[in-house]
Image (tube, rainbow, N blue to C red; front, side):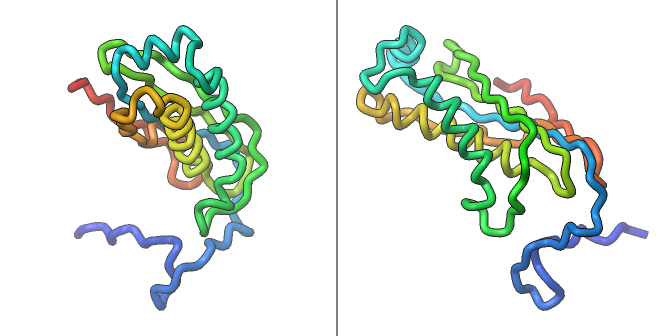
Length: 167
């Protein structure tokens, strides 16, 4: 016997969008990690890493933007609950082989609902900010690989993305 397919939680029985009622859910510690990347010309990567971008500190600005985005996810994604975030950390890894910058976000909350959307939003906005800060010298940059890397906590348990060894 096959298991029933998962139900979309943001749709009611009539198919209308609604905000999920989390009032009866247990408060648990929840974490999420999300990633993304910005591919760019090698010269653009060098400019960012040397701190010579005309707009200023690209990675410092992208870090703040990512944190701010996580805090405002509920204002951007219509059915997300506002969360009292415990931690949001945005890290950057220069990758000359890409060439570009890999972004990783760690987010944590004690709450009744997951924090995946906050981590994904932070990663997306951090990547967009890198693009914005360097677009004057490289409009060919590509933003991609935005994805959930890990989540823990809540009823659905632990999720860990498979490593992509093709890179």
